[in-house]
Length: 190
Image (cartoon, rainbow, N blue to C red; front, side, top):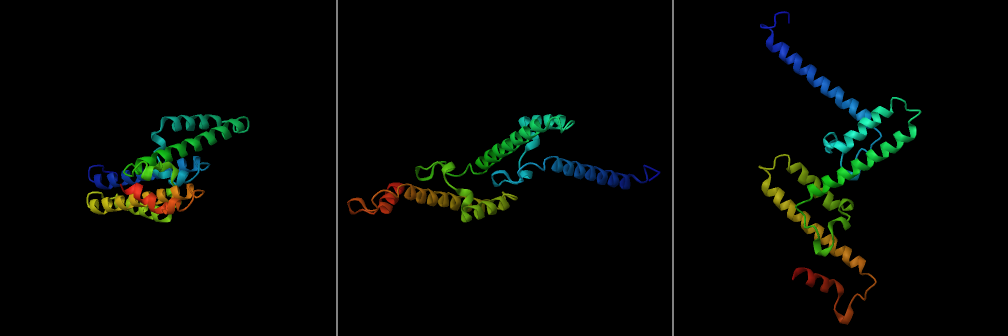
């Protein structure tokens, strides 16, 4: 390595390794600094959120760093700030979910998407995870993604119908002899 010209490849490889290690150490430090955060706000892994690109979050993080210079004296402020940072992470996770689900009907069967427990539905979550996997190569998986998005929309409509029925459980199940479920299906397919 003493002759930079003759050893240029080895030097470049070593510099690349050192750079990779520096990035790895920085990531580890950032993870340690953020250990107080919910690891998966709204079910979204923290690593999928662009926290470093969010000016509000970054400003809070810098303020926390300043307060940590005297953690005893600033304990209450630090705790409050960490709570605010967690809230911001949850807000960013909700925004990410909305963006990731932009292809869904915003109000299936007239029920706002936010009122459906999509994250609690095993079938929907499985389809969402499969879609995420397919999106790693969207060009090659375009047909599968489109079909899956259609299935996810159908599932959202099914969950919305179930929610409407549950919300209307107090009603006569067959007013005037017409089953409520049948009338619900008729109004949603017109």
